[in-house]
Image 1 (cartoon, helix red, strand yellow):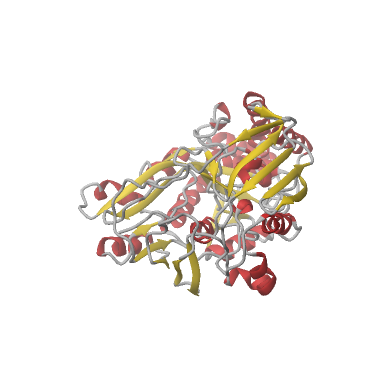
Image 2 (image 1 turned 90 degrees about the vertical axis):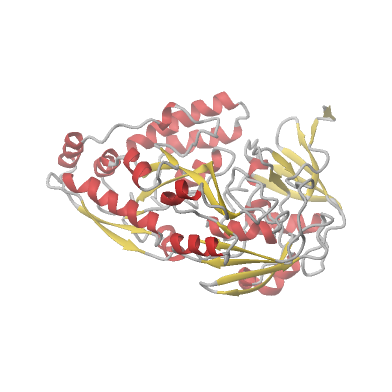
Length: 498
């Protein structure tokens, strides 16, 4: 109902807890991560593996449930003005940060302003926020410059995570090594490249939770080694599962596989700011030569779907814009000739260190070679790969996106001029306008029309080559209880036990 120009939403907690499932309390749960989280600070993070750890340390204002719907978390309820520009959040009372300080409206204001700072990776996500006002100790008003359809969706992730203001001020830039939130587990220690240890938060606001005493994230880059550890009981959950082992795992008495469509995609940036990919025809030729079905079949064992857009079937924007042309060597050679490279050219492709990265890179080499395009693969640790890409120090870089619930979060920062994820250095005034208009429009049909227009331009300009839509695939010991799959592909540990 509408009250005084505001729409009242989300009264009460309807989160992910499965109270009916009987299980033991206490003990340690070991989770393997396929890469070492680069930055344990939501304000500066840009990696999926960071988010795996964040879910245990930091609560958010709002969260996603098992159906991908937005539900209350630290904000018990909220109101939205009729012009869609003002949000009033009613906060949960009695919540403490791990350092014993109070979670309240001042803390929310502090986190918004920190994330809006020009140094923060979250700045574009909150760019439309014009003012944050503390109404009372547990009520916050957030005013937007203009309507912003994805706003609540943005707050289900890092921009909505609440860090302790006192800890941020105490540690400064070193907060990423001393993260303090209100979540179910408290950061205790880290061994770079090896493990991250969290311990139970005894003062967690959800009574009776968490159930575990400790969660340990173990860094295991090799997925097959992680699987061996899962089978032996050394780890209880793997955040990624070897695609070729999915079928065999169906008959394993000790483990099960969660294989669900996600919101993300995989592909590669082509750096439009430097040769050779400052020439559009060369980008088009590479895009045209990629055999997406082959990558999904060979590398993923079918656990994914070929893609030509950032929108998975789970997004309302999914549709014809995801269609792609079959590989066409003749047309690719015509494009090379038009670019003044009739005999082909060479470039270096940055890839990660996982077997999937390696195999995908090798397939790209083989797909481009018949056109005279020679690809050198440079393997990098994931944090270094991100750093090189964000600084524009590359020709091509294979980096995907784990996906977000609102389509805007899968496209805006990646292609708007100067966007924080626009590693391709792409700039197009029409795309900029369409992306801005789409995030101000609440009508989904109209938004889809705008995104279709954007994709038509991106297909022509090819600053990013989409390979496939990802599935989220976890390996889980059958001894683990309380697991709930959420479409964002991030493991929630609050209700897990074993």
